[in-house]
Length: 189
Image (cartoon, rainbow, N blue to C red; front, side):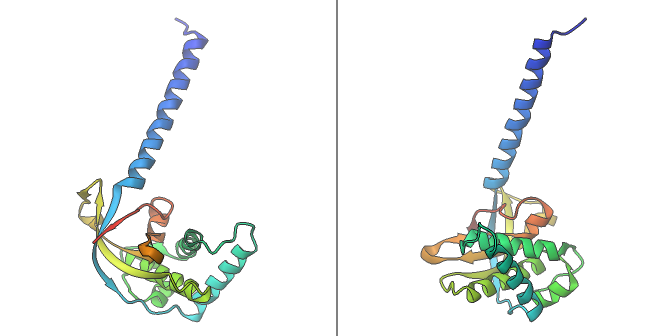
């Protein structure tokens, strides 16, 4: 029994539409579903000269493109790229010192956040953006209001504070593991 070409075309369009709709719903759930409950914060040391040199090169390369802006999201994306290009996720090493994490390379979210905080604060200082600063935070991860299971429950992350109480949550660790580095949009204190 032959199926008509109209029927085949209709089924193909229906299936394609369903896949696209499910992808959009998935992205919306991921984008709006994750949040952190703040637990603690720690002071992160300045980056060493090697990290500063990499940041300066990245800023210079970005300035040479037509898209250069000192927009906070652009700087956060640059830091996401630097950190995720340099580090690899591993449960073996946990360190608060960005210079040590940079040298070890295989670190967990603690090291990712430490390096990203030091890079962002160096960028803000270099560019004279005194109204911004980055902090290293540790928190509990929730998805759609539910506590994540044990291995995913606790996470260290970067928070960038700006003028008028604005905050951003770039996450190079998530950029490496899951998504684009902007998976979490809010922190609850």
